[in-house]
Image 1 (tube, rainbow, N blue to C red):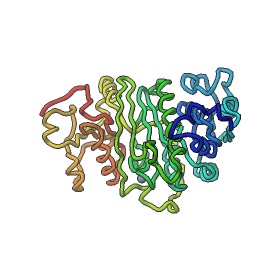
Image 2: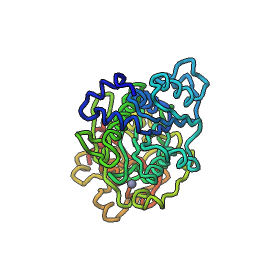
Image 3: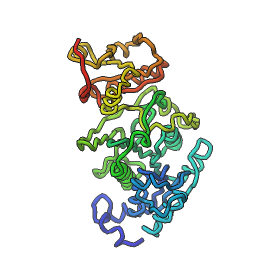
Image 4: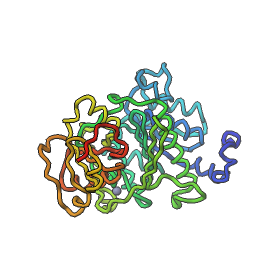
Length: 374
Ligand SMILES: [Zn+2]
């Protein structure tokens, strides 16, 4: 191992020679070598992560190059994993790279992921995100999660023995319309930021070691969801709670059966509707396509709420009383003040069998659209 290659990180007290050895021994599987996976792979190879697996079934398209910085214009039409592996080997010949030019499925997931210590989610579809969550939980491995849409991004680390899993947050894939990056757009640098955060979290996990997730001042985003809003550069860290009724981590790992989800949800990136998207829907006269459901308490409701909203406080939901809404054929858009209580309300409604749900991820507090006072 070349000491000088890693000198800038080995001088850090938290890394040192010991941490560098851990990095050299570490095995990270990157699922999806796109906007998130590309920067993550480059930084992990550069840091000397000894074994990197890349899985992706796609070929490089010219529209990828705006954010998938591991590829060149000359790579168009070629397998992503092959090109990415070549690039990583050129960057750091000390690293072993395995390329899997296929899609991760319930059938191949265990065999591919088993040899790795950490799984990094570079996917852009719900089908893979839910499969990865169940896979990581079943195998007891940390999952470094990331997602991006437009000017916003989120990252977290799900590692069930040390915190909640992705399904604690989202028990099932969304049943309602959510725009994809292809439809809604995404800024390239945001992919770079969130993918780099994922690489950073993987390095922290490796240096900390598998048995001690919080040590030496390096605290991975376990049980924390980092949200970055690039328009204003606001960041929020939401503490996530373990859901005792989680369809995944409330069971024993051996009971988890991996399954491939309906491809219908494959275009979705997030079931959360940020306020600016909701405002655009409103301006585009598509507001009538939703049933807004305000789950704040009466005082908050009386201070102002969304037009045509129904009011049903979370406290009633938690007592088991469900609202009666007209025409549930439309998606119900749940909202609270800041987007936290509405997540809980979604879980309750889903458990009660409701489908076609979405929520305002920034809450009424950040709402800049029309408001009525009753
Ligand atoms: Zn869970």
